[in-house]
Amino acid sequence: MSATAWPAPAKLNLFLHVLGRRADGYHELQTLFQFVDFADEVMLEPTADGAIQLLEGAAGVAPDQDLAARAACLLQAHAGVQAGVRIRVRKRIPQGAGLGGGSSDAATVLVALNHLWQTGCSVDELAALGLTLGADVPVFVRGHAAWGEGVGERLVPVECPESWYLIVWPDVLVSTARVFEAPDLTRNTPRMKMADFLAGAGRNDCEPVVRRLYPAVAQMMDWLGRHAPARLTGSGGAAFAAFERAETAQALLRRCPAGCAGVVARGRNHSPLHERLAAMVATRVQPV
Image 1 (cartoon, helix red, strand yellow):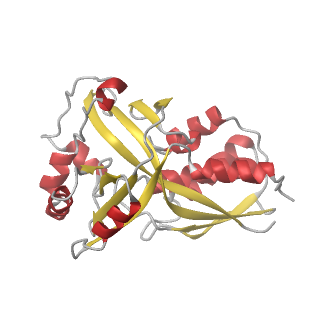
Image 2: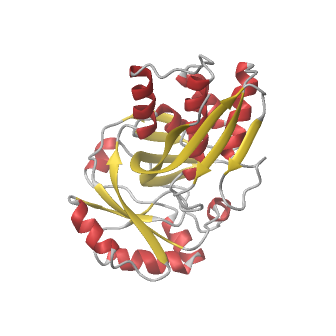
């Protein structure tokens, strides 16, 4: 079978609160996930030999640690599939930025191979598999903007304004583990409701720690904040600001500071991955 291309979209955390530390060492969170139309491209070529081959992936990540390859192995074992696959991940989403690139790549492999291999797994099964790879994987598997709780895996679909976003990041790799291990991380933010967020409440509790540990992020956010309300996404190094018009965001992107990169992307409540899958099903593009 020939290779097919699948999007692995980035996500934004429109807010991120840390409510406390759990007995298992993980943190209890509240967040609001929304996708954007900025994505990695995952190329999948099913084979008959049973081998999982990662031909292109994230720079500096060993094949046995790459989430896309691990997702393929996980689904193959879970479903008892005899087929294999050749995987190429064309990275656009920066690593360590808090945009969920690795998790999205894994979710795309799970969702797309479920179709291509005809494994028949339900979305709930795929989300449960994805959770073993990372806390953000289930929201990408389910494919809808969502209010998230727990470690981010308890999800309630929501509809958010699909704003234009300017997303910028410096050339630094932010460590999630380092951020969540920091003694000065806020861990007692009160639980809130969706109505509170719509009324203007919400922040990113990781932001002060990331600013302290990574001065380049602080400088970038100070620049963005002078032009629009800026917020960090996830526990990474990327910040975003919302705009009504793409042209306004593009004009500001052209003034991005040296040492930083960025993109203008549209917020999406429905994942481009699931739109791609629906299009393939509708046109009856099936494995051969």
